[in-house]
Amino acid sequence: MKQSETPANSAPVLASSRPPAVPVFGDREQAITPGGFSDALDTAAMRGDFDKGLSLQVYLPFCTTRCISCDRVAEVATDSSVIDRYLNNLGSELALITDRIGRGRPLAQLHVGGGTPSLLNSSQLALLAALIDEHFYIGSDCETVFEITPDRTSLTQLELIKGLGFRNLRIELREIESSAPLGLGRSYSPELLQDMLSNAKQVNFEAITFDVVYGLPGQTVSAVRDGIRLITEMSPTRVLCRPFERDEQRFEHQRGIDSHTMPSVPEKMSMFAAIVDQLESSGFEWIGINSFAKPDDALSHAQSEGRLVRNRLGYSDKPTRIVLGVGLGAVSELPNLLSRNHTSLDAWHESLDNKMSPTCAGVIFTTVEAKQRRLVHRLSETLRAPLTEFQGAEQRGLLDQLQAEGLVTAESEWVQVTDSGRFRLLQLWDPDSGDLKIAKSA
Image (cartoon, rainbow, N blue to C red):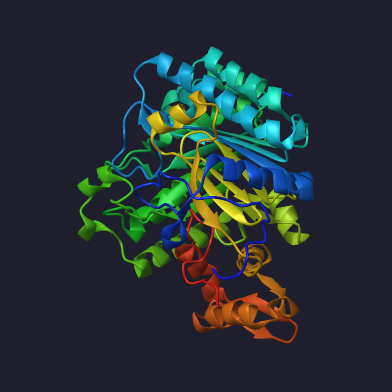
């Protein structure tokens, strides 16, 4: 595989006539036209934004069943032809984007996620790789990540995924099967996980990341601690953590989860503290606010050298801030625009069948808001930022909010994340918008 202020993005992003029913990005979300998104791409290209590091996220929504705790856009696929049609229009979406920004741009990151990407058969995987190759350049320094599910990934498929150019694997894990399983999905036995890891190491993948979801219904601190202990015994390269949030408005199937079984925020913080303690005592280094890596890992080196970068795909040692998302419900992040695609498969196909971008909604940031977001991201990367960057009424307002919450201190020349703030930031982080839930424009 080879608000009142004018938005900084000078291209108009016009409202669509069909806004989405359930906002993903909160109260600030507005409908966006396909033409408005194309104009935003044109403006970013003219500014040279894509020359500073570009990430591509390809979203494959298909699964064999819908897990009750699933918090992603997902479609149950029982017919391979459904995936074939999806891949065809995925190619159309890639073409619409590269027609605006130019073909052959080098990627710093490539992430294929879902859903269950490993549900694709061999020919479909090969076609997916060819589609990406047709539109972007994948160099040897590109961080290539493929999400897998252990119960649907064989050694042969791992060999194919590696042969197609993916050097890193990511596995979402909600529970390691125990004597009292929660029955929420993405649950695997220690034996299955160990077998998958052995196969991955045999194929020589560079990094294997466990994406651990905690704070699940009925979950206890003790269960989290036991699960992390088993993970450390398996010794993955990296561990990524995020708290589960029940959202029955966006995900109607989650109405089957009793809200009274959901852990409280303090309980989730206790779970995260147990995760940190277990992983650090096992030799992992705490990266940023929610990742962990071995001392010799690229992320550990990037953190110690001040090169750590965070975008909506997670932490990276690559200097990339812009993420283009393609596929059902995929999210793109430009300097002053956060946008997303249709979450209805029919609407997504309809747009692309008519040669239009499937972008339907998003948030447009003013210059001030974009700077505030960047400051918060910097704090999540380096855990501190120069006090001089908080000059001006709006930035001081943000600093006052962060201090009032006990998340940071401002002393001498630096704004520093507090010890408690490092634990609490993750609980306040909105995974969809990439903002802190308390951080609003002054």
